[in-house]
Length: 501
Image 1 (cartoon, helix red, strand yellow):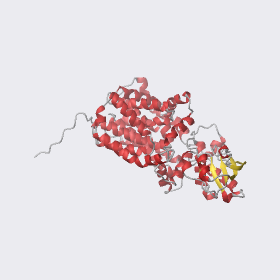
Image 2: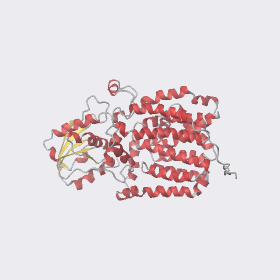
Image 3: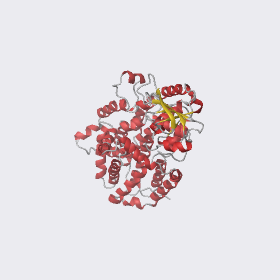
Image 4: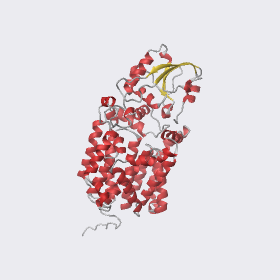
């Protein structure tokens, strides 16, 4: 008796083989500079904050969900170095290269399309730079890429288990950053407007949504019991970006440039146009446009859009493989363009120069945040020397103006005799409160005015020095001594807390 095989549904398109070798080569070529530079310069300011928050684990924080502090604590337990801390950043970046290739495959791309999509991701300024830091802006786009792959695969196969998986990925993303909720709101509107509405009728989609909601309850509970501080972060980010229409409108060109020149930006625009022209995929194109409008209106950061880049690049790569664009567009798929992109992206995305060269040659192109990696240990030593010279250091607390400064002193100052630092800035405000026996404050920051009226005396003590470790955010930060606290810390600390600046 013969064995019968269930027929393949007509809607399930056959896929090309996975381009394992060329995609692996692209991934390896990106891994090399990421690994070689992972231990260069030092921790980024936000990485120091994740480490500090990881020593005060909670279900939530003023400025983020708890996944990154938990991940930082786990990596720090394996080894105290930037290299170890950044292993997850490298892995998710390399994983995103592979996911971008797999999205191209789901869209009908063969070996060339998969390789082009992977290579475009690998020469993106945003993602190459992101692979150097452990940050929400590195982990979150990986989860978006995974979610987009599941959705595109569902469109091809209608396998509802993929939608449950999408719910699980959404839950993890919500513990990284709340932005994924914006994706689903925009995608829901786009699906209602242009379909396929069948997706919204699938019980598996709502089962996945239920998983995400239930998983989110603990961190929502933390936010509720702390007055929903995350809601105030939008205003703080808006002020940092520059709350003017000029600042808002800069989001789009900055996001485009972050995709990488010349191929990243060109394929991003072309891929978006192709999505909008595809009957079943156009909802992803409209989701991208809706998110752009929302982030411009809310004056968000340019990299909030980065999660949508992989599907646009994959769509463009498939069209290039099919030779659908005009000939003058197809030159983008040539190796000289990708070689040029590598030359342009590496110096501005990764710390490729020795640190001393930045001091000696300030005109060298370097990562924009290099100054936030250099000088933290040296600055902590300078603060510890000022603290050691205080006659009343036994009853002196260390308070900083920014969470970067507090995080650096927490990392490097404790072994130098500094007490656990406190800061009223951002999420650090809920981590540490100065002890009641501390009647004086060594204040590290440019603006000590919040202390006025709460201490009997306030005077300058000098400035933080980082020696040859330059350029450094920490170098030259003023030091102040406030003595004679006039009220208990339980009353004073809430007046010094400003979590939304």
